[in-house]
Picture 1 (cartoon, rainbow, N blue to C red):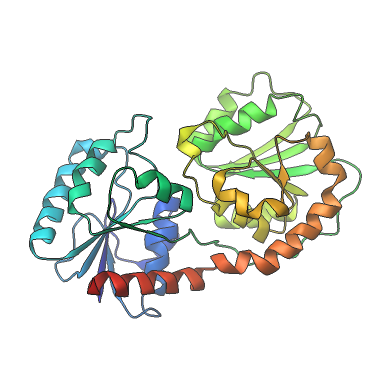
Picture 2 (cartoon, one colour; picture 1 turned 90 degrees about the vertical axis):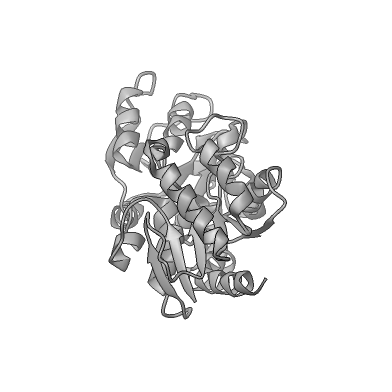
Length: 330
């Protein structure tokens, strides 16, 4: 079976994919590229569809799609459809939603061309079902770190917290840090993001207490692992009213579990099945979370035993293989 993943750029080396800074590339196309031989497929990726491909997976096209990439992709997909190729949409962000996206027109145009759709979460499946009657399969994002044993519970003294995420999540962090009721302690905060995310934080530090000491760095897998070693817990604030987060996957939460860090997070829909393992960031202030770190550390031990293995790369690669086998015979 030959799979081509339609994503921006040209990729000759597997490492270019599974080491990409773009999560939508790294955790989806990159996972399949990494495990292609294990799951017995031939894999290619990039802007130009491999003529040998049996299955084409449409990845995230990118915000610059209207500069010509949308037409390039649509024309190739029309030809593939005419040649009876199986066309799969990997829908990782809700660009058909109520908030205007430069990618929304592209997704509207490809809807009639697709055979099946894959999404990273059940909430995203519900959102997409309003736009298509095609079969929708949930295949989660994998975690990218091996589980780290939680530290000896932190009781007293100065606390160091970790936050990691894309620029799109940065406004939620800023709003939380400005909330003196919920964010009611002084602490050190390690912030890992992409360059636009770090620039956003620097530009919006006004009204964030100077007693919250921040250390900013570019996100990378190794930087995140290293930062976890110096952190006592992880923050994942969001906004339950923001439609852009309504289909968000559980990946950041599960990654924090794997890093061995007690977590204080918003109760996003995809987080609800794991709510017994983390602190609800809106339910009580940070000072309460700190007092219960020993309890939440025990919860992380349980999460690493019961939850984290479900999201391993090996498990999800096999899930993709089963999906591809089904897609080619139906």
